[in-house]
Amino acid sequence: MTRILSLSDLHCGNVSGLTPDRFNPDSEVGHKMHLYRAALYRWVTQEIDKLRPIDICVVNGDTIDGKGEKTGGLEQFTVDRTTQIEMAVEFCKWVNAKEYCFTYGTAYHVGHEDDWENRVASDFNTRPESIIELSPHGLTMKWRHHSGGAAQFQNRAGALSRQQLNDILWSVLGEEERADILVYSHVHHFDVVINRFGTVFATPALQGLGGSQLGTRRMGGIIDFGFLHFDVRSKEDWSWKLHGLLQTKNVRNGILPPSARALYN
Image (cartoon, rainbow, N blue to C red; front, side, top):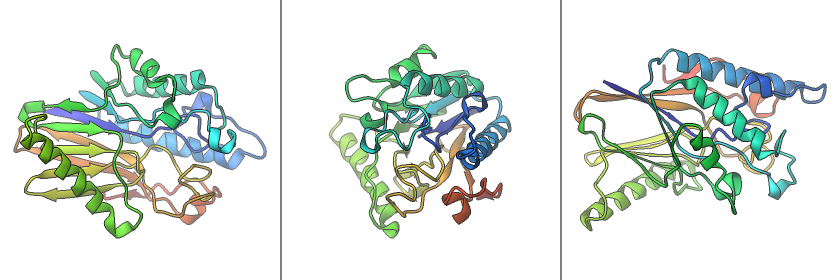
């Protein structure tokens, strides 16, 4: 069996990004967000601990949050990309997988002029790719950070089906092998489409609520916090699990740490 951990959208450096404890700032004004970040990180590490040993860790883009040019850095507790990279590397090394794969994230976060995620991946003797293709035990799997979203909640599945159709068409043209499983990120919500042609996932994010570009300041859409893992035994015998936290309104407003109630137990 091959166990694959699928992580994405860490957004290290954001006020609600994934933050290892030694990087987590505290202050009188920001104490509630300090507690929130600590609670998120504690939950993530506890969940991943249950999954060891991990054969492959796929980090599907947006490991760092960048400078936050559009908001003047107001949504980051640090805009130093070197520090953001240190956070992402420390967490990924803690995962202690046998193999690591990285995809490129959004240029706004990870660099317009420079691919800062190259520096994250270099610590694992690899480099990011636009598409990660794996074939454990004959099961064809693809990861790509970017996915078209949907403005309306009820259309989210349609956005994933469109990505699946594109993959099928590329295979018909002979340019790519059709995937049994497609994994997309970027949209910060979980969804899955299962049909006779395969399975398509949109992954939750490892960035929480409150102060984020998808949080209360600009948008009101539902987002999900968490990650996926896959256990692959053969092309016909594989399973997946969503590890997600139920985010409450109080969490959204940055008032309380998140509930520890897991989604889809």
